[in-house]
Length: 206
Image (cartoon, rainbow, N blue to C red; front, side):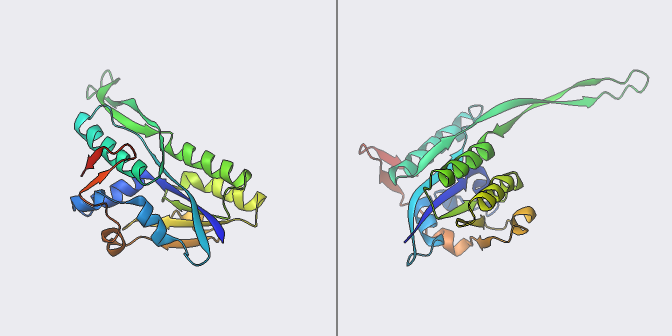
């Protein structure tokens, strides 16, 4: 059996789900989804990684996200968290005689997930953890890491998986690797139940 590892770009998947305007889909069992992607007769999952970050500046969203992460951990998914960093956006003032930049607003950008995915992919390839890697993301920043794995270890295989209503990174397509796409029916078959128990027996509710 070929050993498979799954690398999931959490926010890439989240924003794709958000476009459906169906809150049920956000309670997605990523283990069940991963099992639906592999070839069960010839592949066996070794590890499933979920990469994301908590939005500390949005307490309610963070609380819901923590519940979801607890659900993911309850089914054995490895969670790797990055962080958000504040970014100040500036704009030119309208005084043409004395143009200067002024603070327009503060915003936040999620950092580290793409780097963390690339590092885990490269580490697992080097340590011979997988024969095939499924990368669920449309982020073109991950393509150099995938390209390096294929060039240095051509016996390994990478499958790029696009979230619903999202395309594949064009530069990944040019690598000539296998492509898969997640559809809505697949999502509906892979939802967590309304309530589950974590490894310590604590209740995790949708």
